Image (cartoon, rainbow, N blue to C red; front, side, top):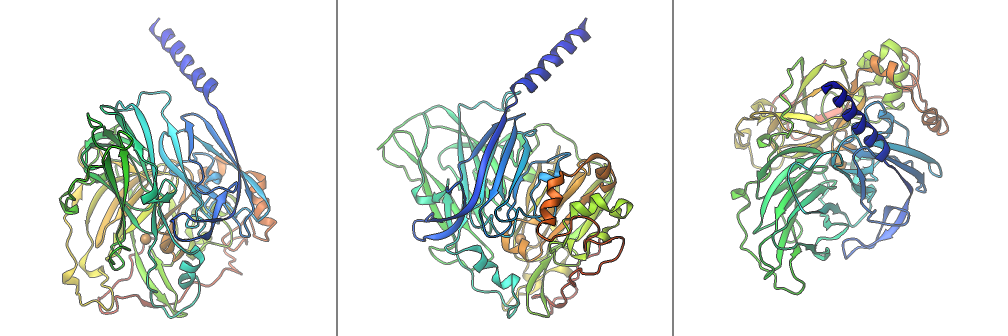
Length: 574
Ligand SMILES: [Cu+2]
């Protein structure tokens, strides 16, 4: 009897799921647009249907989101739903020359994004630097089948962008073109809140006594954001689409690509309106008054016209920032038992033709001539050999269902924000890098002894999961994933200049299983062929180990800034 009831209940749930799941179809014409977003600079950017910012996308759990992209740009384009697993449909991941060729100018392609996860995501361009030029938009997947983990009365969205006065191609020149090998003076971006200069943003409207879920998305491409709601009780409940046990925090310090949900309790009174603070900053370029950091204030408005109550600033170092190693996932998924360890080290190099590049393993990542997914799908048993993907794809082959622990070393004073496609990872440990790999920037009167030694910090209870992590200065981060999503997934720094300089590797996950389970949409390969790009075979588009036509690997002249600091050669992961 009980089991009959259970079956009935299951049927009801399943039919509710099927009957009420919507198909949300968006037609996107991606094209150039002249905009003034920061209040000062009119510049060419990339928008959708003549609009920038692109209107945020809201869907419900279980929905199917279809985005019909038409490319009106003069360069290939593609879009990536950041944080979405695409289990079984990895060819919709949108990473150019990883899972597809870019959509050529004048052509169209449809992306299907299954909303099987809930939480706070975003969609952005993943061809060249189109993300930096504006092609980015929040994607919110609302809970539908369960109650949210905590009660709140309403939702607010806060999406943050760093915005440069010139097109990204200017910023990228020193990486893509041979130069003098020196780092150019930095340009300082403006901070945008919900699409416009952070000081001109629309107020957030609060009613006394209510609770609000504020979804915060860093859609930045280079700099970091700090967000605070002074005078309010703030609890973090989500990081990168993963719910966590509510934890009181003072604010959020976010690398490019990271997201949080905060539940903020409104004050009991509408006597005052309360400013909230958004700081755009970069610790890796000089601090200059008014440029870095840039301070922005928005308003939590309780009553129109009420006076704004400024609270005295607290020293940042005294504040309790949301910290993923301290957070507990709401499902308490235990730490995965490790089968294999992989070590990656972020290193900067200068090539003989004076390009400043970066790498995580042996070579700076460079887009292979054939998208790695197509190589994985079309080379049979050879797909299990990392060599067929070419040296510059930096392929790491994962066995189906194995658990890997990846140690990412950041031996420099430069922070990074790393994103893994197709997964969330368990963050298990932070700690100091080995002293003998530390990089000290040239020209600074510093030695290795000056580099701070961070304490080892480990998860407790269950490790928090997320899809984008920050590697602090002179520290390593260890994360674990189970290879349960056969596909080809990029792992890369989400700072656009670092990614362009090669700070990426490719996770080739269970290519043998992938070949059995997945069929590529036919038009996907034809899109390559129409552009004269090969869509099968090894990285050079040939059979076997014939790599004729594969570009040569860059020749390293020096490991940047480290010549007097011993061995900075990254460890092998073979
Ligand atoms: Cu980086």
